[in-house]
Length: 166
Length: 177
Image (cartoon, rainbow over the protein chains, first blue to last red):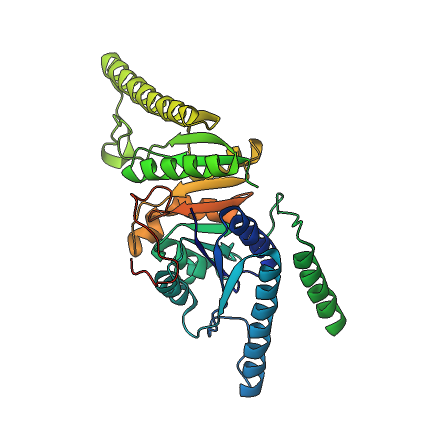
């Protein structure tokens, strides 16, 4: 039914529920995934420093690669993409050209920019997407306790790394 | 994965599509459906009868006028409920357990409330397809639901393969839509 699922991973602060949900959907339909992270000037990354910017690009790409390994371990195919541009537009463009049947993204962060709702990525995608869109809340009472250990481990190590870096 | 799907419907054409998608999804995941219709005063065919005059004063109405309005309203409610009931029967015939409920009030809030009390795993909504400025002012239902839903929200636009009329999908060729 859903052969191709595009997952936009940059939209929310907490990508774990998005990723777990995406895997759950993909397993049901045996779909091919596209893990997408759009590099844009709307992200939190500061751009004071070209070297810093480049290191963010590289680390994000590495993150995408490790996630795609997890997907392969589960038995699914994953493509990865890290285009540059306006986030919402890129998501919709890629959904079109890659032929996505479903777009999964995290809940748009209403706290970030409550007055400027029109600019929000989530709203843009929902209104311009060529296919159905699934929005996963970042604080869901019913988050999928992912039974895929690899996903849990991956994000657990990330969290400990973040804590130790502080 | 999803066991309880809340489907938000109205009387627009896209609702038929949302319903079809919901049934297809529920069959694939063995889920049950709750069909929800929220009647709101801002909906197109809500029978209005009381029109404010100058200074926003609502003139008193004759008893007969009130009667007529009440009948109109009652008829509108009944028709909407019948439509819901028939959709629910269609779902059950297709092998999907379904319930339905019709409420009055603010659609966004009621959708989220019911999703909460019924313990929905997924909310399905359609889109009216408005864009630009009108989307900002009038797309308020999906907007509200998006930010306040207790669970994932699936917005339906375009067709998935389940309901698309037999167009074979070639997996390795980029598809222009």
